[in-house]
Image (tube, rainbow, N blue to C red; front, side):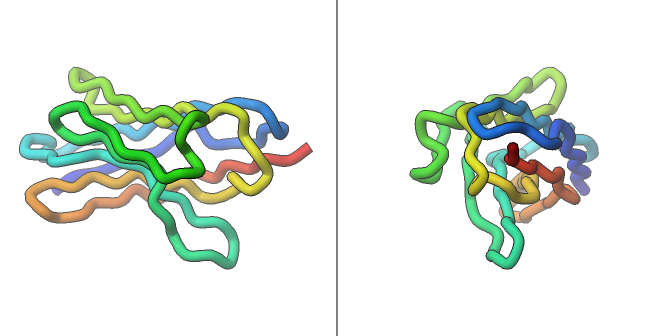
Length: 115
């Protein structure tokens, strides 16, 4: 089993920045990739970014140039640095880990972008 705990969400003004963290514990060996998704009110959950075991990354178009995913292997933590935030970035952000082809999810952290 893998446990994920997100943190770092909150209220930020448009144009501001936040860094989300996801602490991964449990059976952390054989993790294929770690990523972030988000779900805005009334919308489906959508992919944001992913970092693979080899270090390569993938981003959805709206995240390119504004968001950066990274990881600390020693701390089993994945981060999402979000800059130039917009009101439409308001959502619950979920951490996702794929291990041995099984998806694991955190409970999410709320990001609200508002003046």
